[in-house]
Structures are given as structure tokens and as C-alpha cells.
Image (cartoon, rainbow, N blue to C red; front, side):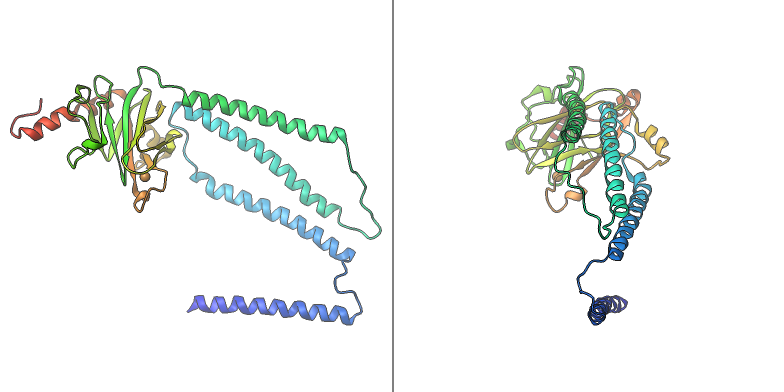
Length: 334
Ligand SMILES: [Cu+2]
């Protein structure tokens, strides 16, 4: 009911303003003034409005920075992410600098040099020096940004080091499965044709490399300070593995293997202490709208110290031990 009343009030207010404008126009025509003549007073008023806008606009920006700044991601938990954050801040600093200067000048000049009767604008069609300045300076700044960007990009997309821990992240509507390559650090072969209810990754039982693989759902652990190489696959549509705290993202494309790698530098517990939030967890998200439950396609990541990681890994069953246990029930897993 209140909503309807508010709408009615807004509509009536619009009508009222319309009528006021009409009354004003009639009164000016009665006074014998030209209806659309712009007077010096009007220009001065416009100048003041421009100045007011400048102040309100920057107050609004500061308010937004204050209220939404704390919602930004915490410091990077991966090695390369530190450099990426630096690059991001470097770009933002340049943008903010230019943004503030251009806007202050634009609105302040509109206020200071409002149209005065009898004043004419200076005819200023061309100035080589000025054009040189506004071409060369942005060109240099852009070149610096691009060089820094390319350097970071080349580092991130370079092949992972040979001793990186190999893992697979397998995406499907709407969940993630993680597979560790195990002791041999080699992922066993898999084939989508072998997928069944009990073999959701389509593991090839004939490939011995897969025997020591470890498959986990819901959450996976990675060790601090060790490079992890993720091989990404998809069972159905395009998904995207997004690990915001590690500043990493890569598409998972059906029929091909994509890759990303990073080195975690802050454990889950350290990050919880830093953020003063003991419920904090790193997260793997899907960042491609892949269907109705896309929003809930996520997996928890735990960054452990190496000792904790090894202890956790020991509690996990290998693919071989799981399958043999399933085949010959009472026999204990190897
Ligand atoms: Cu998805």
C-alpha cells in the first residue's frame, strides 16, 4: 500500500514540476522576455551547479571507496599474485590521477569561465607543441603499462616447473572433482567414454599411472610454498576455474586440457588470522555461467604447511585401493 502511495506521489510531483515550468514560461512571456534567451544570470547559475556537481561527485566517490573498499579481495595468497596486485594498483594510480585532474579542471573551468555578455571565445585552432605533449605523454605511459603487463603475462603463462605438483580439476554441471597425480606425479589416462556412476572421471583402469591417483570432492589441500600445476578438464560445457585469492583463472573446455599453475604463499590458518575471521576459506569457483546451479559450483581449498599436507594426503585412499576394495569387498585395500 505504502509503495503505491509513493508511486502516486512521484507521478503527482512530476506533473507539478511540469505545471510549474509552464507557469514560469507564461510569466516570462508576459514580462516581454524572450522565452529561450540565455542570460548572464543563467550562465552564472550553471557555473555554480557545475561546481556543486564537482563537490558532490567527489564526495560520492570517496563514500564509495570507504564503504566498498574493505570488500575487495584480501592480499594475494599466491606468489605471482603479488606482482599482479602491484600492476593493478599501478594502473589504478595512473587512472585515478588522470581522472581527478581532468574532472576538476573540466568542472572548475565551467564555473570560473561561465559565459559573460560581451565576452567572446578565443579562436585557438592549432598548437603543435600542445598536440605533441598530449600525444607523447599518454604514449609513453601506455607503453610502460603494456611492457609491465606483458612481463607479468609471460611469467604467468610460462610452463610450470618440472617439480610442480600435478593435479587435475575436473568440472561438470555443477561440481568440481580434484585428482592428485600421486607418488609418480603423473595423472592416469582417462576417457569420457569410460564415465560411469562409479567412475565419474572416466579413469582408464588399464593405465597403471592412475593407480596412485587420489580423487577428492568438496575440498582439496595444497602445500605452502610448492608450485601446483592444475590440468583443467570439463565433462559437459565450458566452465571456468576461478581461484580469486590466488589471482588465477582459466577456462575448462570440453575435449581439451587447459592449464594454470601457482605457488601458494599464505596458509589457510595464516589468512584466517590476518583477516581476523576463523571461518575464512579459500575457494575455487566456476566463473562461466554454465547452467541453473552455476552459482553453487564451488570447492573449498585448504593451504596447509607441508607437514600437514603430507599428513592429510596419507589419510586419502588411492584410486587403486578404492577400486580393489569395491571389487573384492572383504579384502582390505592394498
Ligand atoms: Cu560451471
